Amino acid sequence: MCRLLGFVSDSKSNFTELLGNDFHEFVELSKVHCDGWGLSNIGSDEKVAQMTREPVMAAASGKFREEIANLSTDGALLHIRWATPGLPIKVENNHQFIYKDITFTHNGSIKPATALNDEIDSKYLALCQGDTDSERYFYYILTEIDKSDFVTGIKNAVNYVRKNKEYSSINGMIMNEEYYVAIAEYDLTKIPAIFTEDYYELRFKKSQESVIVGSSGWNQAGWEVLPNHHLLVVNRKTLDVEIIKLDA
Image (cartoon, rainbow, N blue to C red; front, top):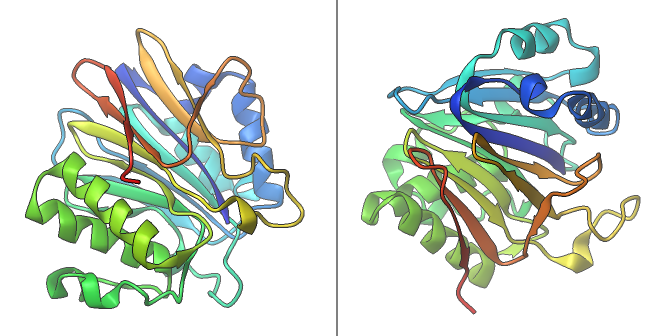
């Protein structure tokens, strides 16, 4: 189980500029979600995603502080990891995952971790470096994107998983130079016992300058809830937001 945070903006920025002191509250969540962190970015005028990740607690990491301080981009994703039981704590199992201009992060679990192997194009399955369901979920999404387009492929992949696989949550965030998509799809009966019923909720905040999406557990006063079983799609050129309901 993990915490996710991402933004797109109309000019280069960073998490601290956009969130102020509230960003410190988000980082404090890593004292529970303490098994690693990952930071990725893909600018709206770039063709290759960049990523840094480390299998240590974000709040205690000098490397994390340095990467956050030096971040300057108009699109970024941040992940703090609480490892699914049975999956090792190592850098290969940390999010984010990147492929060319696409970066992805996930919160939840699909069981077993290899549940999607048969549905992943062999060229993507061969790229797997870690043990996680999350990495395989990413490569399955890429498989579906190849069959259609970016947003349609994401929707088709999520609809397939939710109808055919066992999962607690397949919440995710995926970004390329054109779109930022947040996925809200989770099972309310599988929230970890130590958390409240809003644990899997994703909330978003839209302004003229940016769109920010984040997991729950910190100050998000005034943010809107992205309903379960929906995608939030942001056009990075215009910052227009569309909320798309997944298939029944």
